[in-house]
Amino acid sequence: MVGGVTPTPHCIAIVDTRHGEPCLPLAATPCRRRRSAVGIGKPASCCPETGRPAFATSPTMNATLKKFTKPLAYALFTIGFDPRRLGSLRHFARYTRDARSFRRMGGRATHAFPIVTDFTEQAGSARGHYFHQDLLVASFVHRSNPSRHIDIGSRIDGFVAHVASFRKIEVMDVRSLESTGHENISFLRSNLMDRDMAADGIADSISCLHAIEHFGLGRYGDPIDPEGHIKGFRNILRMLKPGGSLYISFPIGKANEVHFNAHRVFHPKDIFTWAEDESMLRMNRFDYVDDEGKLHQNVDLEADPVDVVFGCGIYTFQRAR
Image 1 (cartoon, rainbow, N blue to C red):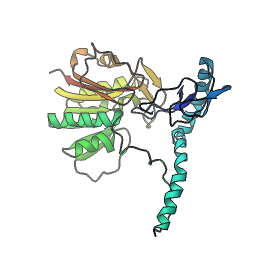
Image 2 (image 1 turned 180 degrees about the vertical axis):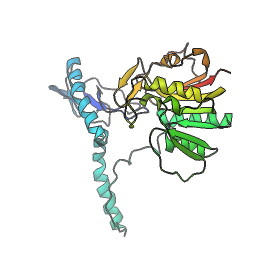
Image 3 (image 1 turned 30 degrees about the horizontal axis):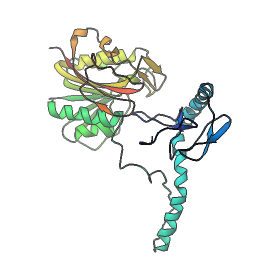
Image 4 (image 1 turned 180 degrees about the horizontal axis):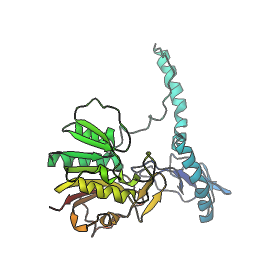
């Protein structure tokens, strides 16, 4: 993603549009300055932006490119190889120059450990699903200061760590967890699709961030259940005291989808059909992260359209008294 440069319509490049979950360079779009031209088709002329050969393309060629690159990119990603990292190899010459300079200045490197991906990176990532949801919901918990807060399956080194910095938090997950060494974090291994694991009215505050979409898909060793997210959600509601707060987030898009066995994607309003009794819950606020990883706060879900393909909906509910 290169800001401030007008795309040139004569050549195409593989680029990535990053949001909360890892995405792959699957879409063919006009190339931009400082991006390498990649395409298929008959060479036409040079791109006036880059000076590199351009390619005559058509909608059919673009569709063909996406058809063949998408499964390949996903296959590489699943075995731990990120195709987006290939572009960083152009920085290897800089690493070599820096190593020579270091030696000429009297430095002695005991090991060669080339890292060429950080030369042009920002100081950190301040966008995406997890950055925004973890920080935002942790601030809600801090503000409300509940008597007992239970978390279901959220990220340990994100949201749970945020909350544990200022209060005790009890974590439940279908997976095991070794001792964290921090007294503010307690853990119970539990399958929340099982009704017997959900005691009634035990907490006045519960969180479940980017977890419910996995229930019943087997990805984390949980039992296969197409209705796992519904069962899990209803059991979480049973655990919540009347008047208590529920903070829940999950991927949202234009329609309900199942990407087996990775996750589900839900229409933003689908959650309102999950409870056995709709009157049990009142939504206090809705926030979401868009496809560009930007946070939209306190959105009116009825009045404001949420146009995302793979966003993150962050819901704050209160159980009826």
